[in-house]
Length: 311
Image 1 (tube, rainbow, N blue to C red):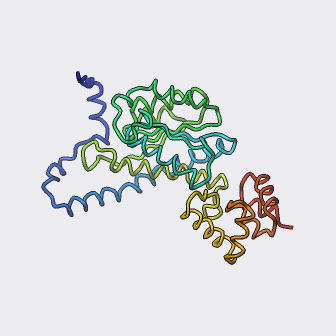
Image 2 (cartoon, rainbow, N blue to C red):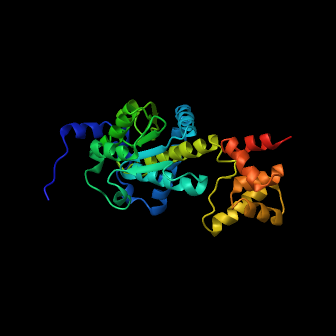
Image 3 (cartoon, one colour):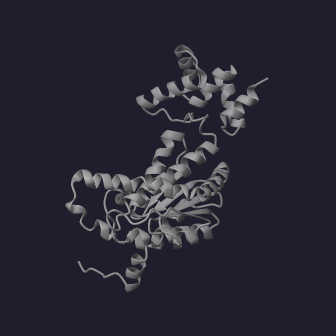
């Protein structure tokens, strides 16, 4: 197979990126003991939350915009290549069991498709047309949000996705780990978590990946809180799809209500296992059908439904 050398422009671009910088003080890291290397990695990882903290105002502004769109029925779409894209797929895949999101409400798109979750798909990250095709398949609307994720902030697939989505009127967020990135510039909401050079030169699955996961967790989790998917810090929209989650459902109802086991089992049975509904039947003293109606009228917000049920 014939290899194609990267262009001189790409070489210079990479050389200018903080995430690609070489750290001469670590040039002999392979001579250190395992404990010494582990200690170094742990110290590096400890700097990531501070880098995220510096971006909190921009992260919060993006979340408020996402929640507004999703409150109108829009979708949240994470899109990226390599580690960044895999983290987006991971975050999206965890929303249905955690928050009972509907099919397609939170989506993760990865350069190279599902195959790229477990193997490298050569050239996929360099193809902005691939991103456009994947977004076209979703039939984006102005109520949707596209979050482009790229450690370098220059990946053509992610940048192309954000530019295309913004042109269609969708809300766009660009999450990068370098300052002054094309990705952040292309998005309505640019978030640049600059974590500095990696322990292994250019290995952005390390600090950059950790930072991206933290921010993606914030975007999805706080958006769901804003949408009424929680009651306090309880996951009242959890989908009980296995024994562990069914046990968690019962515990959540117990924590929210303080009710006895028999009353909890009765409430869950009367509401087809819906945690939020079961809590409402106990706290408001209503039947399952009334609980469902009150929640529908309150847009799924349990506090609002409880207020509406009060005399």
